[in-house]
Image 1 (cartoon, each protein chain N blue to C red):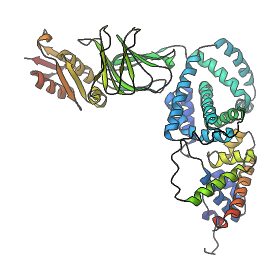
Image 2: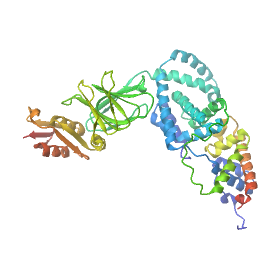
Image 3: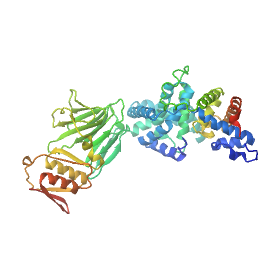
Image 4: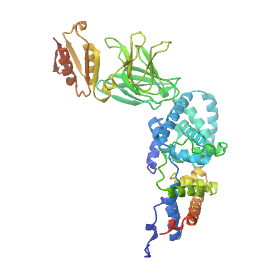
Length: 343
Length: 184
């Protein structure tokens, strides 16, 4: 190697600022060696846990966090007495206070925080609504994700308090559920869907012509049951669907195309074997438009059921064009929305 | 590893204040791997380390409304992991390295590197316990001297001494092992 003299600080591996200050106070040759030792020591770095292991740990923690939040309402009186201690501790000078929190006091601080949280987290219902023409995505308290179709509403108790993670749904939604020990339950006007951790869609529109709750599963296992039923429900595997019509038991599992079931999530539009009025009501919700059907006293028992599947549906007109080519109707755009004239 | 800036930490702390689970998830995912390694060092057991880190996060969650965004949530987590780990009865180094699902070890392209890595681990383990810990936090957890001082409840000066002495120790061992490693 070259013998020329040089400023050693530029000839050694970089170290963090703090360590640099330590090295700067030493003889340059020793600083160079220690910087090398620092760099070489990186070999001893342990493998980080895999993403999967981190996710598993997060799921475990998310469950514990939910349980802890649910328990915050209990034993308040006991905790308040203890929190008095913590308040007394905090009467010291600010610096001291922080040190004490960092040492022993933080345990007392936890307890005090739990008591405060118990008061603030009094059971409350959270409601999420997607208006007509809009998709809404929401995160639930356990980390599960939900996507709401236009004109849909869901509600749950703040922090998912209670023995199950319970969601009430009116409308249509896709759930991606974080697995945890507490069951995840979607309750509609006539059905209950129970899962542990999975992804599935639910359609429950009581104002449909034949009101039903339709459940389709993307991954995992789901149990569908009539609301209030005590017997076991129908178990669905990925790619299967079941319906609860009125107060009947859930229908037997049937294979479905998940692409079509979930078309609404990615800008598509799909309805299968439905009366015209149901499909048109969906178009109204989806695009936030008004559609008038003529004749107004159309007897639907005379028209056949229709199926529409558009992987991409930019606007109401695209869907109406498709429907009318099947049904044999004419549509016209008006200032108020559309008029569909059935021949 | 260095991507956690103080402002990110402050944001996460505010997220905790609001009981915002997505902030909690981000903090968890960012800090879990490092805290797990630290806990493993302190407890000598994978399973215990996992429990300790879970417990630390849970305690943090329970005190979420009183967390001060002006204080480092990172140091606080290390302090909690440390306190919890040191209160677990230390079992013999059971099941060490069994449950860690690390990425599969790269094929030993360089056997010598692997051997050297093993030596370095042995040399670090030969340091006095407190020095080992300070060095580990500095070298592998990217904690600043001030943060280490807070976690270990010692002065910054002491931390600096630990780091210098640890590096000198490693340098001496490296020189014995393979002098060419330290040559220009």
